[in-house]
Image 1 (cartoon, rainbow, N blue to C red):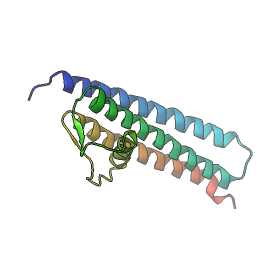
Image 2: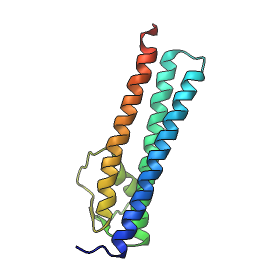
Image 3: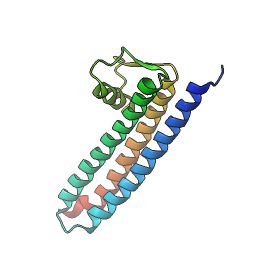
Image 4: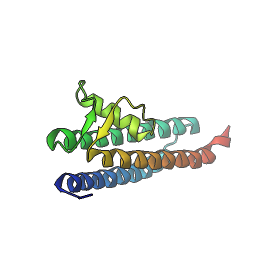
Length: 147
């Protein structure tokens, strides 16, 4: 197996995307935590803010992976998502969402070097979702018994 230009660029784009989403998630959770602790609102509203903010983070991260897949397959032609998405960029977002959440319906399948991005997205999505779940658990422990 050789690592040529397409594979090296794919690894670099994947690495940059994973670093970007992890840093975004870290900073996002930090901001969410500071925000809900500083607000003088009902604790149930704090939990709702937490959940909606985390969903927003995950959605943005999915779009970031979709952009990476789009650039790798469309701009560089380093692999493909099959069948070729006919719905445009939103098909890439859909592919990214099912990969990030590790659902993997199988209606879109990566081929070529972009498969590396898909595998790392699944791993990253799993880690970030469990990180959010842990963060939610800790924040709920802080506020849950206040009724």
